Length: 460
Image (cartoon, rainbow, N blue to C red; front, side, top):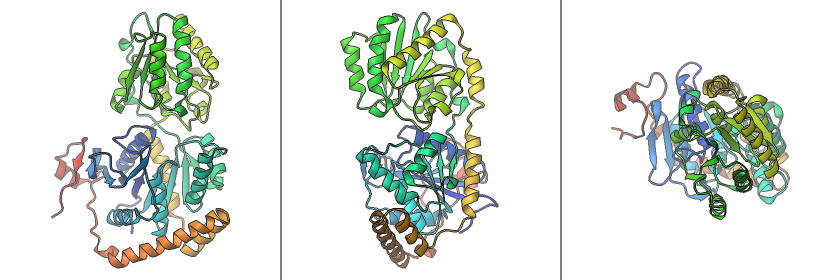
C-alpha cells in the first residue's frame, strides 16, 4: 500500500487519551495531526469511546477520529487481552490504507495493542513517550517490562525531552540511535497576555493541573496557608480536578481562606488562557514531568513561572523566565517569595516581552516537520519478518517474558491469517480521503466549514 501524493504518508495516531478528555497527550495528538494534515499527509486518530461519543467523528480540517467501543479499565485506559482489538484495528488500518502507525503514551493499553498488531501486519511503527517512570516500585517494574516488549522491535521512538529520552532508553533497554527528541509545543496565538484581567492591589498565583499525587498537590496544600498568612494581598486560583481536590478544600476550610483560594474545577482547553491571564505568577508543583506544557502556556501568557526542578522541566524555559525549586514546601515558598519580591520591585519583564520570547521557542509546525523526518526514516526501513521478530523478542526481553510474548506474536499472526481468510483485504472498502489540502470531499460534505464535530456520512 502506498501513499497518495509524492512524499505523503497515511498516518494513524493511536492513544487511549484524546478529546473530549483533556491533557497534554490529547493536545499533542490533535495539534500534531492538524499540522501534518497541513503538510499534505492523511492523518486519522484512533481512541476509545467517551460516553456517548462513539463511532466515527470529524474534527477541524477533516481529521477523522475513530471512537472504538472498547472497555475502559482505569484512568481512561482500556482493558487489554491483546487480541480483542485486532479485528477492529486491522479493519481500520486496511480501510484507511495506513502506512505508519504512531502510538502515544506508555500508559495507553490501546497504543501498545496497536504497535503489536501493526508489526504483525508489516506496517511501520513509531512511538512517542510522554512520561517519566521510576525503577523501584511494582507498578514501574511491570510497566517498564511491558515497554521493553512493546518497543524492542518498534521502528522509532520519540521522547519530548532529553531527560525523557535517557529515562526511556534505560527503562526499555533501547539503542539510543533509534530514539529522537522532539519537544512539545504551544500555539502562541491561543495564549496571549492580557494584563487588564489582573485585579489591582492583589498578587494572584495560578495553578492549572490535574489534582493528583504526581502533580504535587500535597506540596501545594502546605504552601497555601504559609504564604497567605505572610502576604495579605496574595490570592490563589486553582484550575483542575482530581482526587486530591479534597485536600485543598480542607486547607481552605481550616484556615478560612474561601475568599483567597478559588477552586475552579475542571477546565476546557479553550478556557485555560482566560484563567492564566488573571495571574501574576504560575506555580507548578509536579513531582515528575517529562516536559510540562503548562509552564510554556503560562509563560506565553506573560506569567512568571515558579516550578519544581524535576524531570525535563529545566530544559523547557531559559533561566530568566523560570524560578526552579526543589520539590519541597520550603524551597517552593522561597521561590514564590523571590517572584513576589521581583513583582513588587517592578524588575520582571512585561507580559508582552515574555510572550514574544516564548512564541519563538516551540511551534507545532516545527514539531510536525521533525516528526515528518522520522516518518521518512522509518519508511525506508525494512519491517522485520516474523522469524526475526520472534528472535528479537526472545533475545531482548528475557527468558520468561520474551518466550511468552513470542508465543503471543505467533497466536496473533495466526489470528490475523484467520481474519484475512474470513474477510480478505481486497473486499474491505477503501475510505474516501477527507484530509489534506485536496480534501474536496470534506468541502462537499461540510460546506467548506472548518471546526466542529461531524458524524460520518453514510456511504451509498
